[in-house]
Amino acid sequence: MIKFAKFYITTPIFYVNAEPHIGHAYTAIATDILARWHRLKGEDVLFVTGTDEHGEKIEKAAEAASKTTKEFVDEVSATFKNAWKKLNISNDDFIRTTEERHKKIVKEIIEKVNGNGDIYKGFYEGYYCTGCESFKTETEIVDGKCPDHPNLKLKLLKEETYFFRLSKYQDQLLELYKKNPDFLSPKFRAPEIINRVKEGLKDLSITRQKLEWGIPFPLDESHVTYVWVEALINYISVLGGPNGKLFKKFWPADVHLVGKEINWFHSVIWPAQLMSAGLELPKTVFSHGWWTVEGQKMSKSLGNVIDPVKLAEKYSVDAVRYFLIRETPFGEDGEYSEKKFIERINGELVADLGNLVYRVLSLAEKFDGKIEGKPELESKLDVKKIDKLISEIKLTDALLEIWSFIRATNKYVNENEPWKLKGKELGNVIYNLLETTRVIAILISSYLPETAERISQQLGTKPGTLKDVKFGKFAGKVKKGKYLFTKIE
Ligand code: MSP
Image: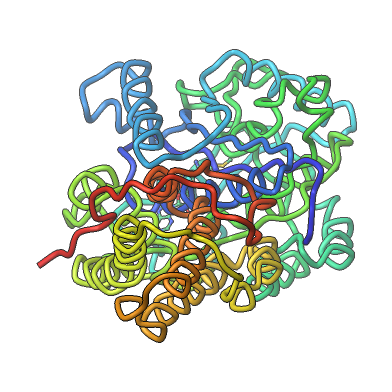
């Protein structure tokens, strides 16, 4: 098994211009699964998330809501925090870019970058997309619009600005991608970044003049720091900065999990900033795909935004977690529809897992003989393979592997027909089923933490870690509870 002594993983910090939807939840859930799996392996894990609260987009959203920007960001940030709690996201910290601890480190890093001669004053003329909070080059503009935000008008900026010498890092970045093939993950997303970097990098404008809501630029307070440049620093400000205790223990990040649309910022700008500040580089930036709803981009104006909390309240938290990771191979794009969602619940959570646990516990509760025997299902399980898949962030493949073990166990019940057995033979089958169910609870615990806990409770066993994924004596006291999942008509 691939073991890290420490494991530092992050989600991007979420914009607080609107409340969380399933796209945001997707990033958070996937990161949570990785964090939980590494904890299960006994590693020292740090998992952080938070909110990105500056910039024009947020300033405008507050205005539209007739609130002060501060009031507005406090409210929306809290909805993310609460949503993550509801969805069982096990983050260790939650950082907000409006916090002093963040601003302090932003200042420190920008001064370091400046000390390295990488910041200079100039003049910027070009287009800016408020939706992306980013500058757009001619080649990125299609029919006068940002293809990702066709409803927004591009803004023509003509202003004095400070630049970061991004161009200086072109060769070092290419070297990084070459030497560390895992840095750009998954592999199929690497060529796009590499080709763009090869085409040449322009220096990056890192301040805005006509903006109120942001961190004053440490080198000249008549400017505001460009939101992306300060937001990326969250990954180290949450560690207390380069001199922080947590930094010494956890930096560099093992995985920055992000959506594909922000890969560039994480795979190009962020490492260049770190190189300039003389800091170590993260090991992996993994970009996942995007969710659409019935074929369309989720948007307030289309009224098709899926609220993950409401969905969890209607079905269950674990149904949401399961669907998002199972429906589409992790890394690729996915399409949500309630019909598909219900099909997954009924066909897999109810029919495979829920049914198995209910059958096993019903048998065990009725049986008054000795529950003992020889392990017969161990060979159907390949934990090393599951672990390898999760280490490679193949979250869907790993889940499928766990599921095939669940299905093999159901098959074992059908083939052994325990309802026809008695005495020692029945004791042996029940022993196998209880031990297997206990092991399944451990294996699914990163994906479906609530369900895993309920299974452990019904089995009367402790939840356990990966070390407990071996077949020993069954030592629980079974008490069958309610069905884990109910069929949706
Ligand atoms: N604030 C920036 C990140 C700064 S990190 C230094 C940002 N925020 S975001 O709120 O727009 O996106 C946060 C995460 O949610 C990203 O990983 C993004 O890919 C994800 N998603 C937002 N909408 C999504 C979908 N429709 N589908 C899948 N994930 C999407 O970008």
